[in-house]
Image 1 (tube, helix red, strand yellow):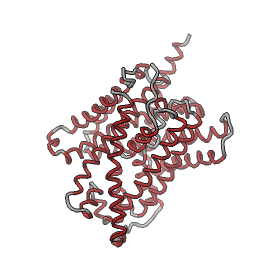
Image 2 (cartoon, one colour; image 1 turned 30 degrees about the vertical axis):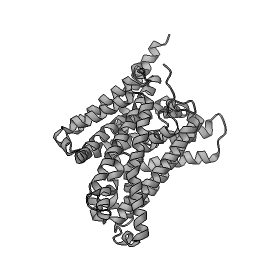
Image 3 (tube, helix red, strand yellow; image 1 turned 90 degrees about the vertical axis):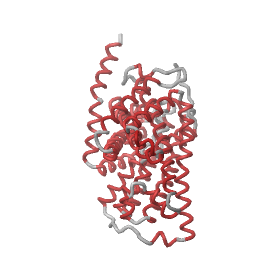
Image 4 (cartoon, helix red, strand yellow; image 1 turned 90 degrees about the horizontal axis):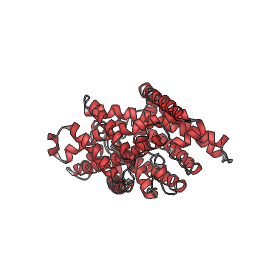
Length: 433
């Protein structure tokens, strides 16, 4: 069955923005507080690096308008095995992301609806995963529509916080200089802060992954990728700077809900609780977006012969039903495994694995652009070669900043997919006449 191309510019942009703004930004200022001004410099490096990678994805989408997403970009430039390893690691990271989002959401749901505290957190997290399987079984257009609505709602608290910051700057600018962070700026702290910020920017590739379902992909994917990434950069740097400058460093580091504390302090006690509602909406929107993304990616892997052909199955609404069910089962297993840890430990561990598993895709797409400028069918500007080199250098920098354990996890995940790669390859060879 031919897959309908139902994703336009706004749905693609909603995927980029909605998948990037998940749970991380609402707690990230507290994680970055110990680094002081290193955090702002780290944000600058992360935004610059991710903007370069967004431009990499945008250019590759222009060069491969008929591609089925990043797998084709890498396969056509560096070969099948590197493409498989990158997509395999990314595929694993997607359904682990859904597990992490579901775990993070359960904590906030208890604050918004206190009666849910009596319900098993495992049951709640599992129910959330399967809820959005149901939404996306109604079709890509339904999932994309939900994404547009939740993306708009999750931007509201960010815009309100930015508005509060502008108002304070105009009416009482001295609040920004009362208690500046005292942590000295060092290279080690800068690298650590930039890699922590990286987790909040994961998702810039979200418009490129379901490329086979995008209308006019050579136009809509580049525009939505760049626009979504730049929007995220402005919002993230703005709200993070406000939290760091308006709250004392020690208070911010201890906070479990930095923006809620910010509202309580400068707007009035009790107003911070309202923010929890939008945190839940943000998490729900991200869970919906990643569910849509991983199902399309799973179906794409089936089309390329790296997963059984059953994952390509579409229901009457054109949704990849088998892929949705398969990845939901895997995410559910991950939820069950990580509830042996505390909620915070489980979320932190899964976040590290997700970040490590995303980097091979970013690295190989940057390398793909470098190769394309040298071996492509048409001559490309030298600036694109430089862009590919800078994108590659940034991913290497991110790997170093993440440290040994996440790097080892990326190697383990890549190696774990090799037996399936060789099995499916031998199976396809045996089926040939």
